[in-house]
Every structure is written in C-alpha cells, then in structure tokens.
Image (tube, rainbow, N blue to C red; front, side, top):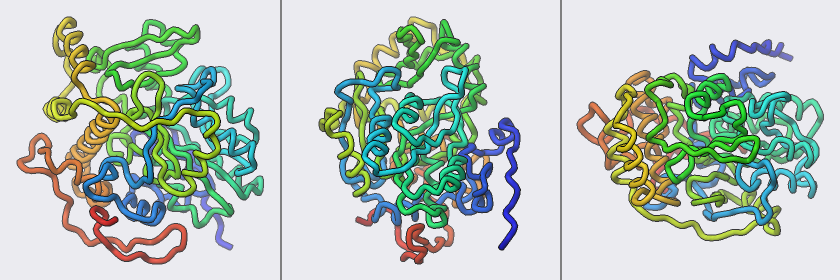
Length: 428
C-alpha cells in the first residue's frame, strides 16, 4: 500500500494569495486528489454537469445561466427558524434528512465557539447539531476536511452542505469515497473572503461591526446587516466605500469562479432569484433534489418564481467600470438617487439572478485573461461564454469566444467510463 502524503496546512494568508478557496481537500487525507479535483487548477464543470445531472446546459433556456435543472421554485419556511439567515430552508432540509434516516451525518459549516460568525467545519450527527450551524458564514472554510471524520466514523449515507468550488472537488473524488449514498445540498456563493477580511469590511460599512450576526447583499441593491439585538442595518450598494476597502477584499479564487449557482448540487438554495423580503429560490436539479424537497414540503410555502425589469443598464454600467480602480465616486445625494432608481427600475427576481450571473462570468473571464491568459482553457468552462456573447469586455473589440484547444475526454465520476466528447451547450 502506498504511503499517503502528509497533511499540510499552509498559512491561511498563503492559501488566500495563491487562488485557493480553502475547500478542505488539500488540508485533509484527500490531498493526493488535489491536482484532479481543484477547480482552480483544472476546472471540469462542463463534463461534471453532464455526468452528474445527465445533460449539458440547454441552449435558449435559463440553464445557460443557472446550470442544468428540472424546476425552479420560490420557497420560504412557514415558521421561520430564529437565528437563521433567511427562514431556515437549508437547515430544515438537513435536519429532516437526519430525522428521517436518509443520512447518518451532515457535513456543513458552523460557527467557531466564542465568535458570532467565524466559520468552522462540522460533522453533525443530530438535528440539534445541524440547528446550531444555522446561518451563512462569510469566510472561506475547509468544510471538506470533515470527510475524514465521516470516513473514520464508518458512515455510509452522508450529506454535504457546500459551495460550488467545494462541490467541484467533491464530485471529482466522489467515486473514491466509501459512501453508499452522497447527498449534495448546495448553497449559492458569489464573493467570499477570509474571516479577517470580512471583519475589516464590517468596520467600513457598519455602525456596530462587532454585533453583526448576518450579512447579505440583497436584491433591493442594499447590504443588509442583522445585529445581535435584531436590528437590521441597511446600506446602498453604491454607498459601500470600496475606495477605502481596496481591491484585495475578495479572495482571488472567487474572482475566477464560474459557477455561482452551484450546478453540481442535487438541490441548490439561494436568494437572488427569490425576491423580497424572505423568499429564496430552489433549483431542483435531479431526482435526489426532488427527494430533498419532499423532506420539507410540510414546513414550507412554495410558489412560482417572478421577474421584472431589465439587466441591460446594470450590465452596461458594470462593464464600464470593470478593471478600473475604485474611486470615491459621485456625491452622496447622487448615490442616493442612483440607489432609488435601481430599486424602482432595476432587475428583480430571476432577472436579478441573471444579472448577477453575467456579472460574475464577465469579471471572471476578464480576470483570467489579464492575470492568467495562458490558462484560460483550463480555468474557464465553455458554458461561460454563451451568456457573454452579446457583450464586449473592456479592452477587447468583439464578444469573447473560447480558445481553440483540444477537448479533454469526459470521464463520468460515477461510473469511471469515458463519455462522448460533445459541445456542452446546445445539447438537451
């Protein structure tokens, strides 16, 4: 038997600087899989979507933006869970999975004792342990380290609550894991950072940074910050002093992420396509996703998603500023007016979600081409170019096209069989 590689835990600042999302693979016994599993070395989203979800993104549908899915719904818990980020949908799914024996353990991100929101990986074995982890954590967390604990405990039915980059690694290594069943409950993730950077950010935007329990960039174009006393502090996006915070807040890995909607999950849960004030959106991606939804049907209200407005103006403004240094910008009254117009005329619901996806894809491709252009074919999935075909990135003269490269054989994580090489867009 080969001697396993030693577990190395480099300094968090070092991982942050070298395009690492600290997913937990390289700091666990699974480290030998890093070269094939890390989305920031060689991303495999196109082929993984095909093998995990059964088909590639269908052209002419919202799958172009959100990834393969069978149904999109809005959801809210009828009786919200106190202390949850929203109404507690993700928490409820995980709790019910344990209560009903669907899984034996849930790997998720909790809070480090003695802090309000510093992330800490957890292997929950009871609904009470899941409940203690409620609420989003803004901070990179090596959640997949807990796979070691689940394996050591001999668990066979495991759920993971994770982010897109974590699920990229997880789906690649899934065939090597000694589980009979793996359930992937995905949270939608955009820009993330270290806990230390998060606290620095709060000091720049909140009147009481040390009492902020939850923070969310809401679809009303405002940053909402909930404090320990229940007060919700709000700040318009355009009033966030990014010129003071600087460009190094967001993790480099997040700036080259192309899977905000977590398309490799069985069930994805987020908020940008849900609407105000407390509806989230569900993307049921496969049969397992429907099974997870069945767990909570008696707890939640379901409705069809809505949308309004247009992303055209928002995207025009975003692209005009992409790559430029942060400045103080317009006077405060002008910013107030801009924020008012955003709320009145800006995109809402699913159109808001499309807007955010296009922004992330544009930022990611722009960053890759300027920081690591020679690795574009390795870092950018081919599906990312389709939503951007009507835009021109700053400094370029035509809409972006994927580089000409030799397509890699597609290998199914589930079966290990080589799949037929096909165009990942337009097949359904």
